[in-house]
Amino acid sequence: MKRLFVPLLLSVGSLWLVAAGGDGWLTQHWSDPAATKGDPPHGWSQLTQDLHPEACAQCHQAQFGAWQGSRHARAFSPGMVGQFAHMATGDANDCLACHAPLDEQKLANNRERRDALTGLVAHAPLLDASVPPKYSPNRLHKHPLNRSGVSCAVCHVRGWHRFGPPPKGSRMLGQINTGVHGGFIARKEYTKSQFCAKCHQFPQDYAINGKPLENTLTEWRASRFAALGVACQGCHMPGRRHLFRGIHDRKMVRSGLGIALVAEPGGAALTLTSQHIGHAFPTYVTPQVTVEAEALDRKGMVVRGWSWLIGRKVGYADGGWQEQRDSRLMPGEHRSFRALGAPASARVIRFRIRVEPDHFYKGVYRALLADAKGDARILLARALADAGSNDYELMGWKEIHLQ
Image (cartoon, rainbow, N blue to C red; front, side, top):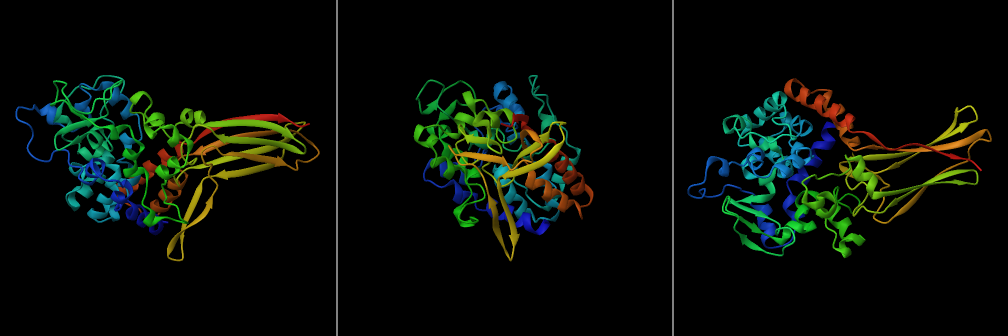
């Protein structure tokens, strides 16, 4: 497994620019992610120059609080950094192209790569998102900027300039003076799905069975949401809140699906409908969703069981990656899972739905732990424990009495 997973990760990471696509400002924004290019503006304070998200939180507390609870804040993760022990620095930086994309977050040499492992082993969350963070530059600068993952500056700062969407309720574009950090430049791209493609649409060059491993923008474009003008930000950043919720969030997933149970001759059925999801469910290869059914007799004993998997499974064999199964739901799709052929003693059929957001990663971490040592072993064990803790029941057992 160790030899199967890492080459895939590196190959897509090194080609993220291809995935971003398009021309003009957005391509430049992601092809040259340097937040501090050139000299800082004259007279700017240390706070204004600081790229740590805690510095931004001095004025943008609500955005910081939402972000700190997101997966973006944890993108510089133990599961990724734990693999750095056996990577060259350039390969590790390929991972950071999406996990910590700024030039200022890159690893300069092998020493910094090794320090990343040691530092993350000792790292604990700096702040409680429920209280205003107190700015302490000396404390913050002991923690490399890459540890903040996909933070404020990754999307909003280039060449000392701040960028963002037009003010709420306004179509104003261009320079907007706010009296702080030279104001900001409003760009319509921040409201478009294409802005997210840099990391959420892998290049076609590395497709498996005609589909990139992450094909979210293409899936969205084929959905009714694109025609309706509902962009990624509309669901994953509602009200411009920096929540970035997805498959790990039970409430988010449940809001996107319709679930109906009905009795049928000889059994029962559960029907799933992808009602409010603008891409495949799930869109990436790492989650696995399981629909389970059990037939119970009069005493409540299980007399038969059924199970169906929803997800995309890929594997490495014969010198290349192959798709082994793609049973995902596409936007608007209805699918029925029928528990038929129950024994005559069955009186009830019950269904439940379980979600493992990090199913694929759990297998990867177990395999890597087999020969990991030192800091790498500590981080991979931490990653495996975190992956297991993310599992949840999307729907607990619900019963249908047989006709």
